[in-house]
Image: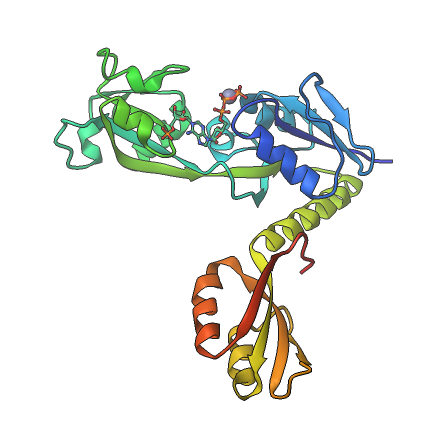
Amino acid sequence: MSILKVAIQKSGRLSEKSLSLIREAGINTSNGQRKLVSRSSNFPLEVLYLRDDDIPQYVTDKVADIGIVGENVVKEKRADVKIVKRLGFSKCRLSLAVPKSIDYHGVKFFNGKRIATSYPNILSDFLSSHNVDAEIHEISGSVEIAPGIGLAEGIFDIVSSGSTLISNGLKEVEVALNSEAVLIADPSLDNNKKEILDDLIFRINSVQAAGNNKYILLNAPNENLEKIISIIPGMKSPTVMPLAEEGWSSVHSVLSENQFWDVIDKLKELGAQGILVIPIEKMII
Ligand code: PRT
Ligand code: ZN
């Protein structure tokens, strides 16, 4: 029987979310603290725990079939892998930054300047697409200190909250890439492995859909029932049941997180009472 091998980060910013994604999909696995590889007891999945930078290469070399890694790493490695699903966590951007005292008027500023980065490939693509000719200084860590020590006039690095830039007297001036964790796959998986991958993606979609939705129950006065139903349409349509009290109905439906506060206000205006909102664990769509 086929087994799908997934590479995830051993320890770092992606580890916990990658593991919980697998576990929320109902797949048992160990946490990789002392192991390099672990095999799930209830799903044909083997988990390899690696450094994030190595994950695209392992997938290209077919040591792993799929992997969970930042899109920034996939792009930088120029790996021949397919992004099969965007996962929505570990969001960050790759940006150019300069000392905050610089009077910056556009990307041409970088012509003839030195830029320190751990992402030379993405930077070089960005610069050539903007016809900028700069000198790229590849360094492996603490990129943000480069301007302060006179190594470069600017940096190109990952930014999340922006506080690292601020505390080093820098300001973000150009965003080259918006990144998030992605599920990558070897583009030439055989059919058996593809089937397992489809099952895994189906499970991940169900978990993610559930996370974005809430189950809502409320009591509605019958005179406003139609209006109430129209603002909480549910997956197919809401369940409506008469209450023991004449003139009232109980309405059950599913509501997306984004609409939540907007809809709750409207429901109250329409006389809805006893509104209960319950998390959904999994949702099959
Ligand atoms: O040991 P290993 O090689 O596996 O891990 P790593 O140290 O190379 O990577 P890790 O765990 O730091 O990051 C893994 C992935 O998380 C990255 O490739 C990104 O896709 C994503 N990610 C999301 C981030 C950040 N947010 C982030 N803020 N990666 C790094 N940072 C660093 C950044 O380098 C900078 O120093 O945080 C600093 C900026 O953060 P702010 O919030 O101050 O702007
Ligand atoms: Zn790394």
